[in-house]
Amino acid sequence: MVTVSKKKENLLTFPSNLQSQENKSTKGFYSVFKVLRRSNRLVLIAVTMALLIENMLLTTVVPVVPGYLYDIRHPDAPFGSLPTSLMSYKGSSYSLQSGDDDGNYSLPSSEISTLHPDGNKTSPFEMENRHNELVDETMEMGYLLASKAFVQFLANPIVGPLTQRIGSNIPMFFGYFILFTSSLMFAFGRTYWILFVARAIQGIGSSCCSVCGMAMLAASYTDERERGNAMAIALGGLALGVLIGPSFGGVMYEFLGKSAPFLILSVLTFIVAIFHFSILQPKVQKSKQEPPTLKALITDPYIIVTVIALMIANMGVAVMEPSLPLWMVDTFGSSRWEQGVVFFPTCLAYIIGTHVFGRLAYKIGRWLAALLGLIVIGVSLMTTPIATSIVLLIAPNAGVGIGFAMVESSMMPQLSYLADIRHTAVYGGVYAIGDMAFCIAFIVGPILSGSLIKAVGFTWTLRGVAIICFLYAPFLTLLKNPPRREQKKAVVQVAATSKTTISVDHPPIPIIKDITNVA
Image (cartoon, rainbow, N blue to C red; front, side, top):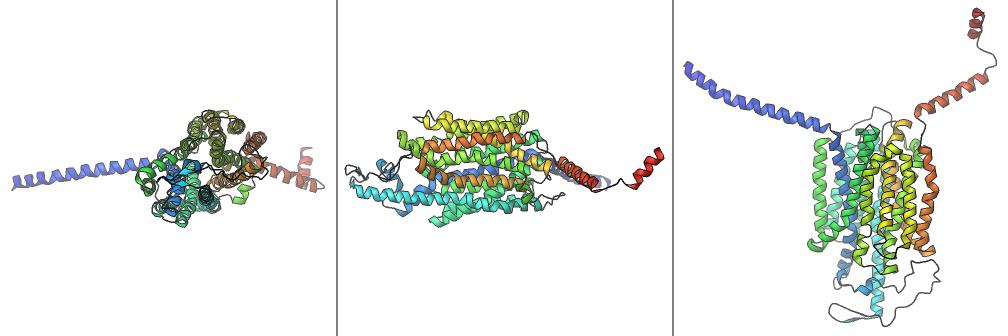
């Protein structure tokens, strides 16, 4: 019986040892997982991936939706079968070279004729009708693209204070859900209005991801040097999304159809949301400090100086995006692929610039980096109209990207720094204001671009924006040494003390007694 009991004991001890080993491994896994959850790097990875996917969705739409809308409305003459001369038809257009148009537009010549794919001639009248249809499509596409920035502008004043009160986690997950829904609507939408709604609600998701993402980084990285580096990496993810989005959308649409790129983006959004969920569980995180009101932030002169710098830098890009491809066609007859890759140097320079100046701006002073960035943008805009080929556009476009990176990588951390020293360390509101500046630039920029080019021409439009950059750059010296909250309180206390002293006619009685005793 003793031996049997020993055998039984031996048989029973093996599973118990195995179980203890499993428990140890499980505890080890959870301990490692807890350590990882406290890692700021995983927060940085999650925010960077969110900005990457959000901006990929932003730019994937551009090469896909115009052709798709034309195809569903003209099934007998799809977008790809349009003759080349039709795409550059300018029967009722104005020159982009200067603004001295007298309103007399030349009618299409009777010699203009092209061939359909079936070999039939296209009459000038039919070409003019198709040109007008393309103009209408362009206007509708413009409204569709602008709807995102407009809704994002309206959502920021709501998302910012909400983030300050309940934390960034819940609004961030809501942003993932909105981006996931928007991607599916783009994938399966078959009418203009469904695509319009998909683009509009994307603005809500973008507001949640941008505001909450930057607020999370500012809260996770309290050291100014590390904070600047982290935000530079996140902005690099944003630029990478802008860079690869059009190529990704165009290639997928060409070979796999309209739904393919958006389905892939929806899957990526879901994966990033799960990854983010495993790091930061969605729960209410109330701030221990009283968050500043939007009114207090908007009326802070140093925050205003920072936000205006961001808006002017974005304005330079926003004015160029819709006008530069048309100017290229009008000036040296650029092809479609040249129009598609013209902004590649800008995005590539932006990615490099954010990583370089995210570190360098802290050393030389963020105000100085932003000041030099506006000057670089201004010089690049002034030299852009001089180019006579796409090769000569590489340098000024790269200059715009470098200057834009210098301003963004220095002014975005500056917003959280100003919140720290002049208000409280709660960042949702200040980044909501910063994102509103971005939205204003991309709402007003394209509108001003069209109006100014018609009035004064492409060259003077860019020169005007460049002059604004030059004139505003000196104002950034105000950010060299902004006063802290304690200094403001000290000034108020001194003023109050001096006011009280002046209002008293005689010194207080206790002081007289002390002087008498000393005597």
